Length: 107
Length: 115
Image (tube, rainbow over all chains, first blue to last red; front, top):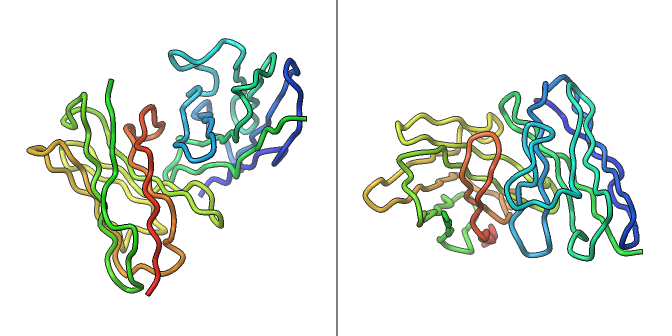
């Protein structure tokens, strides 16, 4: 199985901050890397797929980049509604696997 | 806008079979792939498997010997059966649309395995 590791596991930031979350795969996943946002008690929400393709309705302050094994999710200016847990997931090789999550908290 | 809703028992006894149903509204299950994913504090998010309308399935090898996913086109539903459950199968179970990435999810259902 491809292991997917996120860093950091948690971070504290203020409204307006630029935040970057890193995801590393144990082997190349090309660009088959997806990002989700999850709020407490809710299902994950797909933010972007194939590393950088923003889903409809997702604010443009979210961006993703990377290919191969290293990927980043960046929030350019953190908003109050962005405090949540973020997960990456590879869909290159079955079984699809998720990172352990990065919790973004209010500083 | 497609909506998904999980249903089934919230409590299952060890060694028994967990059975869940996902009802899809606002779209036909005859298109798209449909998946089950679970989330537990210990193992995080775990992909269980998917099915296509043709009956094609793909299961996580770690669960393959115990998992069955089926569709019921007449009811626009798909289902999950997980046999021989243990406490390690306690989790929130989600149904979702997609095979590799998931752009629509149910709200999730907590299933506890306990006697």
